[in-house]
Length: 98
Image (cartoon, rainbow, N blue to C red):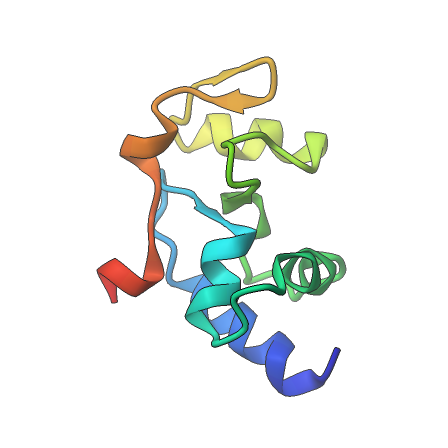
């Protein structure tokens, strides 16, 4: 995974508004690699502190990193069994909203 891809992923992720979430797949599509959601997940591991990685979840609205639960809850996101309630309503699609 190259550095340019990672930087693009971080740029898009920084734009996710507080209290909203996006998915690994939506971020991958936004940077031009629609089938690379796993690479987005890998890029999130060890990302800079100013990248809100906790706002990126699976396409089903399930939290992949359980440690992010308190950060999402602090933003007012309601979770049930590590799944976001009202996921469709809270979903931020970079291709639609940028």
